[in-house]
Amino acid sequence: MEIKSLNSCETCPVHNLEGLKKLGVDMSSFDFVVALAGNPNVGKSTVFNAITGLRQHTGNWPGKTVTRAEGGFSYGGNKYKVVDLPGTYSLLSTSTDEEVARDFILFGQPDVTVIVADATRLERNLNLVLQVLEITNRAVLCVNLVDEAKRHGLEIDGRVLSKELGIPVVLTSARQNQNVNELLKYIHEVATGTFICKPHRSRKEPGKLKDAIDILTKQIQEVYPGLSNSRWVALRILEGDKQIITAFRNGELGQIKITNDVNENEIIDSKEERT
Amino acid sequence: MSITFLLILSLLLLVIVFFPGYGLLSLMAKSRKGNAKILIENALKHLHDFEYKKIAASVKSIASALSVSVNKADMLALTLQNQKLVMVRGEKLMLTNEGRDYALQIIRTHRLWERYLADETLVSESKWHKLAEKMEHVLNPDETEKLAARLGQPLFDPHGDPIPVVIGNLPEETAATIKDFNAGDKLRVVHVEDEPLFIFDSLIKKGLRAGSKLEILKKYNDSVDIILNEKLINLGFPEEENLNVVIDEYKEESEVKQKTLSSLKIGETAVIKSISKKCRGQQRRRLLDLGVIPGSIVTAEMKSASGDPTAYKIKEALIALRKQQAETIYIVEPNGKESK
Image (cartoon, rainbow over all chains, first blue to last red; front, side, top):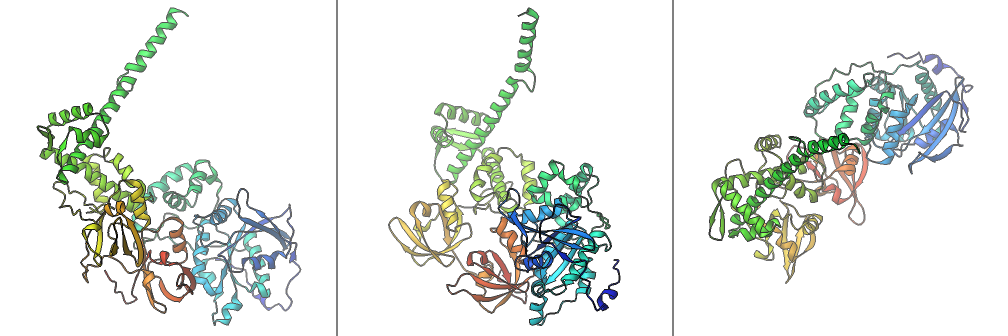
């Protein structure tokens, strides 16, 4: 894991607000797209407001009744477009919300996906975090509501969490505007490739499915040789995920590029998992 | 139109009609054979059904059971006799041992297929019977045995009917219905008749299935009040008739019902065991995402004023679940004990 030394920034008495410009207006020219994901009620909108300002563009996702908020900010000379995804508990689509969120991350290929989590419900929130990490390499975890956690006597160790997850972790209290600057900086670093993420990916698979996945993965790789998360796709097909099956049929899957340093064929055999 | 053209055309027609294996005549013959097999097998099923119920079968009964003309039924009976599957005694038709075995094979396939649909697919209950009716004629004995092995050699189909073993007979049928018992009797459902479909649907909606435990509260002329899952339900006479029940002998060790989350009292803690197969699709997915997975610790924190829903703490967060949902979640006590 490579992190540029933060110490110079942290000990600097003057916050560098220069690079931070809240535009809040939908711009046609931008350099990077940032997706904002997270469970409902984690303060996603507050984070969204904090980084884009109050003026946002709201509408609908095309063809769906789910609302969509877009905004933007400027940092380090780059313009970032922020897309607020619907609050979801997971990306395994069984509802339109989850479909929209999953499809945007998987097919929209945002430059950075910021996952907002609730510091007081971290265990439950990590479900979505890990799911996001399965389909993208470029993510930042924003653990929000730390002020709330502190009131309950909870303190999150962001450093250890970052080490375990392989992505930057920022502890924020968006409503108090605490650490938002750090969040923007990490977004910038991940987007520009300054920070290279090595996302933690669980390789546990239900033992009973191993044979089926092996067969299917081989066939998927024949059709899409460049696809690096073919095992994930295989699992989705076995689940009967309509979106993925359609994408497989019409070639959309070929557009997914996730550089993956982990050798997909190294599967850590786990004891049988039941769901 | 030239003569050559006509010749070519007629040649083409001849090929289409007479081509071995794929021509129209071949296909028609195949489908007739297929139909014939289905009719024979259905006739055998019917004969076995009547034999089991100790009713005499005849050509007329075959005709009405299979919805075919008496002539056709007569021909069927003849075919069955020629294949030594049936003996004719005047008006009565009786299965030979081979006939009975054949019938049991069909029934076995049918019930195994229903088991498969129930256990491994998301197909809804009301469709099982129809699908199995088709499949029973399609799978050969080898395929059936592979299916049985894959399902773990189940003994009962999802309606509670015994699945015939490879060589053998069905156990004695208990055909008692609620009318054979009295108020206060505690009964267990052993079979839910799957036809007619609308009654089956109605029973399923009310929560009745093989293994359900109920208590007769009060019998009326054409209906009965029962207690099922701590709820008062009324069943009309046709519904009553479609339920086979036996007296439920409660035994400490052999309690079939598993402990569910709905039984957790406020303040109590338990460990999630699994989610019932009854809970599927979006609901199941949502429960899993919220942390209702094997091994999770759950505490009942508080009940709403009306008693339903209840707030449960799971994965350090509170979620509200209705009783109906909590009933589909199996739990064990934290020290590993479970009432099984």
